Length: 224
Image 1 (cartoon, rainbow, N blue to C red):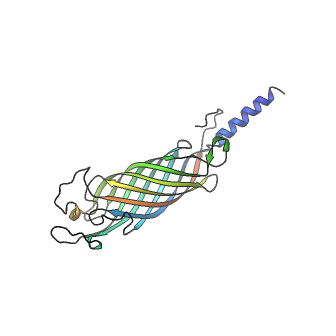
Image 2: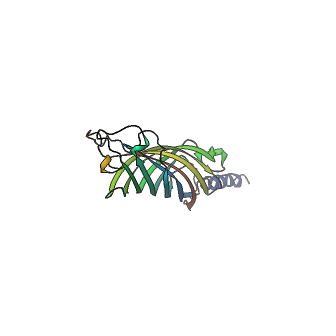
Image 3: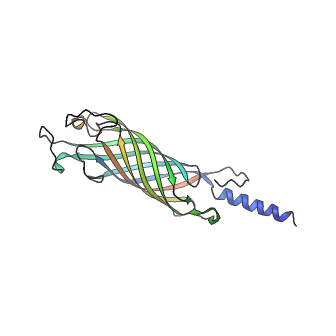
């Protein structure tokens, strides 16, 4: 009997540790708005919102860290007549475009994100930070390929053991100045560079994802 009790304790501990991180991946859909900031909008990151949709895939490293990839389609528009500033030649510019973007990011959860297993300090609700990069093709004028870096914040909530919802906001800095078209690449005749340009875009997205891909059941006490 004295030998059986330690064995039972070890098996229960092993089962709980594995179940607490049953799945390696999650995937789902996201939708929301995308907004442009640049020469035709230097005021608000939510001006002239367009439609944004994406497919999402995450590799769940542990309770705190995840690596995400996504493929998005986003709508953008801008018009200099929306604001009081005028260009040196007095011209007005406007554009409409779609961007198709492949992105990747790292997410850091403020809390151990999970459901149940209070002895591990898991929380169903957690804010998170994100940082990443992406490459996209825009339909503006004759087409434009851009690279961007992104930073953002969000909050996740586990509505069921495998189901998650999240809401996030991110700002994306493009490494170029033709995101809004060649006509707006240098309206003030000031030479731009990778670190000195005016083109940004923001995304505000709500997503729902489902976890899958059971982890290998190794009997140990590694709860990282």
